[in-house]
Length: 64
Image (cartoon, rainbow, N blue to C red):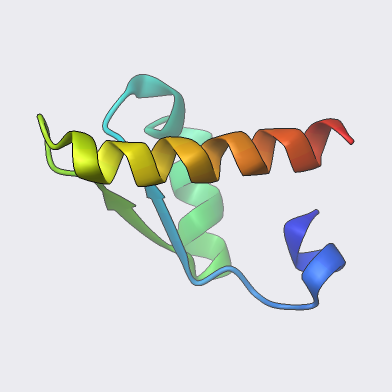
């Protein structure tokens, strides 16, 4: 959805280490599509804040 909207390819997907982004389906999708998955450092609210804001943006785009 984001790629179609912007015309750009997603290169890096950064998230926290919670379970919703560590599922086999997403890992396989990212590998197949050449997307690098990065995870934030535990107990680093500075990084988690950025990730959470980006996650909210993605969810809002998906809902609209």
